[in-house]
Picture (cartoon, helix red, strand yellow):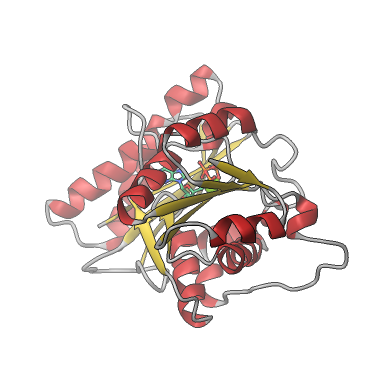
Length: 276
Ligand SMILES: Nc1ncnc2c1ncn2[C@@H]1O[C@H](COP(=O)(O)OP(=O)(O)OP(=O)(O)O)[C@@H](O)[C@H]1O
Ligand SMILES: [Mg+2]
């Protein structure tokens, strides 16, 4: 497994990879969710490239950039075991050299939900993903459904900018109690960790209600809110029942929806979603 930092080294290593090439972008501190993307890439592609970069431009000024969990050696060991061909670990200076001033902004679908709570977040995401695509030139890129809006934003960007690659969204990997795996779960105290199971419980109950015939978007949202309210440690930022592509909030009867939520538990911010 090759590990490179600079663009020149990346290009040299990339040119020697067997095609098709799959890319899995990550911020490191890898868990089973990341590894599921790597395995899917392994299945679909002859070569797998993983990037590890804690992208400063997608963090707000009061967010957790400085405390973001990191363990590069452990990450590299895991990726080696998965048979990854190439790992790119750019520094901030490689990604955003002196005088950097070019940004990718996806408009409509970046606005609601996470975009409303985290101004500038998707500008950072879209910019770094565009730079990863340009540098690695993958045939396929793999992202997780856990970050549902990110998936929609990147799909939109890929189409709008004609990136010649396929974007593949993989299912959310969960802990046994339903909590979506996230690098940020390590921030949770034991009490908070127990409380966090209410997120998926609420979403799964809404999905079960939908499957039993409940098609009213307002009722589905209300159902999730009621279940979240049973857990005093959970502070709700939003519960949304939105169109899965436009991300516009839905009301009344619906045929399909992305039910998503963001909460804080103590100092930790968590998101999750189900598609119905
Ligand atoms: N539980 C999961 N199941 C499937 N994919 C996931 C999961 N968690 C993250 N991913 C995907 O892994 C990729 C890299 O995400 P990232 O490195 O930000 O991990 P993360 O766990 O989302 O961390 P954080 O929650 O701190 O942002 C993204 O495409 C993301 O959607
Ligand atoms: Mg993430």
